[in-house]
Image 1 (cartoon, rainbow, N blue to C red):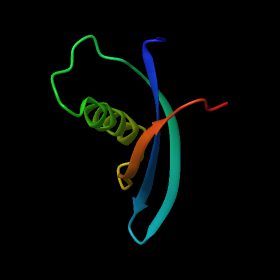
Image 2 (spheres, rainbow, N blue to C red):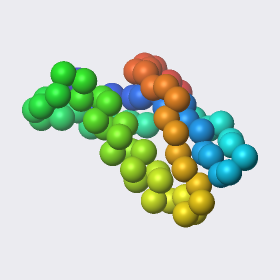
Image 3 (tube, rainbow, N blue to C red):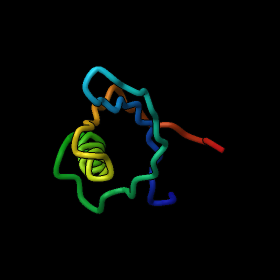
Length: 73
């Protein structure tokens, strides 16, 4: 086992009436301990908070969907 898992994240960047659909393929490290039944959603929340910091103050990120993927090249 590689100690990581890959997640596809679909999201929208909103800015007033404007919105742009985006996606990201992210490798998350497997946690040493699981404190939540759905640990992946906790990783997505952290990822979106970091992504929000990269946006301008009038932009907002909205997560649409996410799921595990395997063997992406």
